[in-house]
Length: 406
Image (cartoon, rainbow, N blue to C red; front, side, top):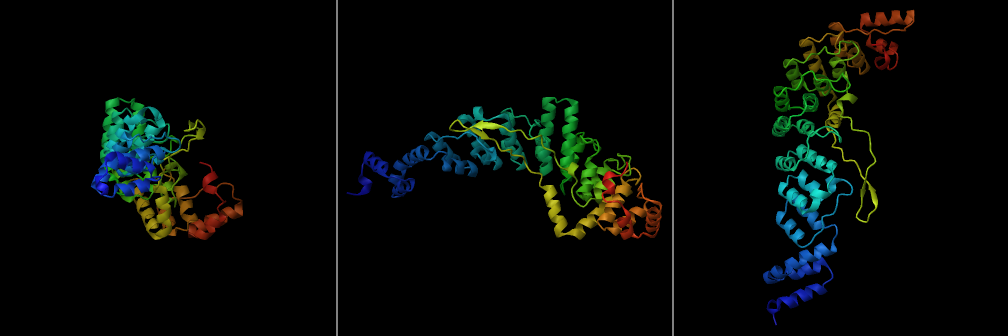
């Protein structure tokens, strides 16, 4: 008797005696009739024997909507988020832009099990990957893009990643929500600070400036401005754009701090980085009732590392960009006495960038070192007059620029 002539009940009985998913799948591949009869059985078998379901995770990550729906109909369990939501099927679906799958998973029970931080991280990862559909879905479900308990708000990540349409969307959301003017000002300023780090990001910067972002916005340290960050990251065209928009290179009004100092640093300054909230030890309840420590899932600002890599691979290019941004600062009115000329000169000498040191000296930069004894002071003054840079560095106290009087 041909296998194709077997009744369905007998085929399913045979499949029930098979001990592995692979064996059932092999039987299902015998012919079309077997496949149509055994495929639902195979889904049920998988749902019963594989928890968590690797097939569900694969379907969510790869946008296989039909497979996902069949698994859920067969009883596949959606495991709760225990550790990183980015490792969960809904996190992978959001990062890959599968909005319909995210919606189905939410409606299949995850809507009530996710915590506020989970929603915020889903939104931010979707924004970083430019997944407009997922962003719109999460906004429609009430996720607040202006929540800053887990780091910068979502518009900062969109601006940082160079996604102009998402930035416009969040700016519209500002108006719709009617955020307090002080919050709006701060978040737009932070978004501008995020945007200026990236090369070829002028479109996003113009959108923010046109929407009212303050070109001389100061971060919480009351010193760092978008211009300071742009020159620190040696973004020549961005620096020019900010200066043309009215950025003031002399806002610090000090020879020990300002854009000239930031421009002459070889590596990204600490205040250019985003500071995360203090670590909080949080726990979730695991599938067996145990307390599981939640691993933080901060999005990483990769641009500083990219700059480090570029500095190592193309030191001359970085020095050329450094010279270009410093020239722009002077072209738009930088005063060494008010824009950090003293520390800038020290930075140039410390890094043996003597072209920069000569350029700064020609424009009036000077180093005022207090506390030298008379012989060393005389030798220092002579070295400055003769531009004997090695002697200047030798006579300058260690870490002078970090501890000297302002």
